[in-house]
Image (cartoon, rainbow, N blue to C red; front, side, top):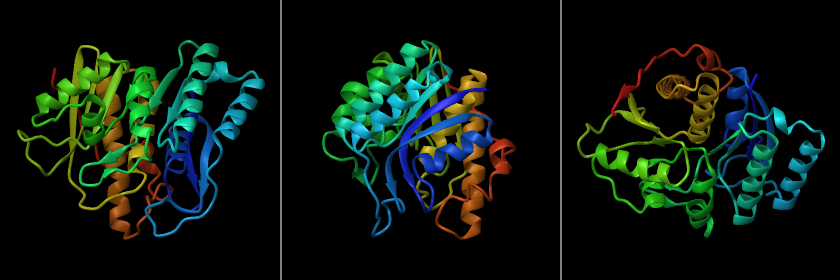
Amino acid sequence: MHTVLSIQSAVAYGHAGNSSAVFPMQRSGVNVWPVYTVNFSNHTGYETWRGPMIDAQDVASVIQGVDERGVLPQVSAVLSGYQGSADMGQVILDAAALVKKRNPAALFCADPVLGDVGRGFYARPGIPEFMRDHVVQAADILTPNLFELQYLTGRTTGTVGDVLAAAEELRARGPRIVLVTSVVADDMVPDPMRMLAVGENEAWLVETPLIDRTFTGSGDLTTAMFLTHWLKTGDLAESLSQTASIVYSILEQTATSGVTELQLVAAQDNIVNPTHTFKAIRLS
């Protein structure tokens, strides 16, 4: 059984960060040790939220305590998402380095949460630069959306070939695998939702129908499912296909339920047996 050390935010109500990633990974048969960077009442897309941001050194102390149990060699991967400060980002990088010291085969999977097309940056000042200058080089798997890919590489993408070239440039700076979400291109029809995964000597694209609403926490779910299936299969096309199938099936059930928050519990059968199946197609 694989074990993931997931260092992310947590919310009491709804699903974002660890509150979006932990249960789906567990339902998939992955053991998860969650470490929280914030403990909020709800995600910050609402008008108000309450609860503490956890001090970076307190997070480091939790990781130190886990290490003192002598169990870090069991960890297959470290997973991180939104980083609230450069100090927190450094603690996460230190945790990934420590896990790799204890288990050289372990992976570091980072979702470089910075912003999105139409919204621009929503990460706090200093975080984009920290991601670009430090996290990219340390990660084994990086999962930017198109906006984040463009920032991290300094490229403007128009065609799917441009997206591929930018992903390859990012790979050349550190990550073995780059998963690009929210892919749009001038030479592709605009309606489907797309993800593109690039590894060594291979690139794959998957399309799902467009669901015309936003889902907070869906990016955290996507990264968690991709990491889960990569750990299980080591197959890039299969990991991409399974991720798209699971995430779309959950989002569809959430949309038809008429509620705002991801319906992870109600839709949990889709984590292991998704209603819809989407196959990745090879680009190179």
